[in-house]
Image (cartoon, rainbow, N blue to C red; front, side):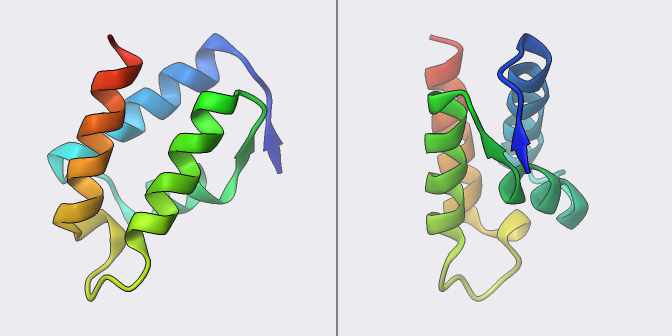
Amino acid sequence: MISAHTPETRDAFETFLRSLAEGSATQQDWRRFTIAQYQDPALELARVALVRASQHQPQMPTESAKVQALADEIGRRFNA
């Protein structure tokens, strides 16, 4: 599934990043936002970076400090 390049898509992804960084994202959120592919190059790069960071982590991606820190960093870049 390729998500359309819309302000709503970007806003939803940024909300996901915030919840992921805060440790409140669910596994359902993770699947929703990391399985989709994005037409927006910035969102797609962020999605790929999150998936790569989650590989080889002993815990679920939403519980990984490494993934949470990356989500926080990406979110700050989006808002800069």
